[in-house]
Image (tube, rainbow, N blue to C red; front, top):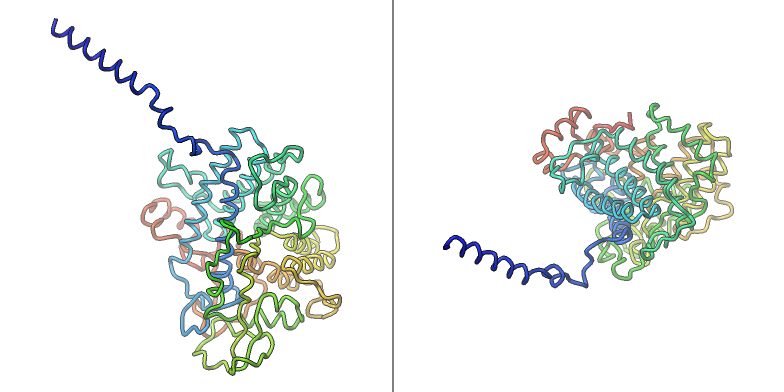
Length: 478
């Protein structure tokens, strides 16, 4: 009887508990919080955060490495002297992987919602960010990355060839998914404002960029694929004018703010590079006043034109008997722009293809279109006699195309650096103060926490690549 009593008592208690908590989930659900994301929930944060970070890195890294600008005074060390720390790529690694997780979630939400446009956009963004990541480091985790919820805490590294094969295939697939008859319904996107046609053109323009990046690798058959794209604009539409470019308009209205909290930080203790300005001077290029201030005599008042100082200079700043040109602070004051991929770049890609004989259109025409667009994207009008100057006219060489591409890619994340590594152009001066045997670094070293916490997979990647240092060329450079 005692046993039966206890059983009956437990049944009453359980039933009572269930009665009290049966609506627990409903009562404790916050109606003001999103419990399920839409495909568009993460789109604007991804675009803004990655683009603004890349713009900041163009200044902090690419300007120094590519002799656009440098710290001044600079007694010793610094990226412009190729004095590169082991931690130089930490922010790049961490930032890109953080947003790749969000891109993955966006794609999953798009698939669940059966929305092909948002799925295609997620695939395009994924290819964009992974290309930045792998071009910066070489082999990187991809297949097993962003899968901590599945218990994969130490992801294996994919080879760069595997990464490129996947993202190029994804861009091909994404191009077929874009549906121009279907509206984007999850709010206004800050890049193309729900213009599906422009998203598709971004996808294909990115594919052109990445195919050219790997064009040294015969197994990728890149030139044939690019020629097929150029010959079939209806199937593979790309940017056709500057207005279509992937250029983020940073308005200054919260949360779309300049990456520089104080614009003065952009110009404090800075100088323009001699190489960057001297070429513009030779071309009598109207972009000078957009990009830089005029140098001055030591009186601080008398202007002497656009004049920079050499990157990697040896000795003290006392050797310069003038105050060098500086960055134009207005470039980082909202409203401002953040370049992702532009029509100017597409035209200069076509110029290179034509110059090498892979497409039949006129290389000079593409060159002129690309240069004109590169000015237009900064609100600069091309002078009518600009191309009459022998220093600016197309001379039939890849060197001339790449010099103008160097300026077209100004302030465009790491692109100047990537393209220099692909071509060795433009030829950058070597100066006495440069370290690393005066060689431009070609990659970031892997973060220390990756070396420690994912040692087995890190070791395998390094063994494949040869070594983990700033001079180890990545797969597409060889």
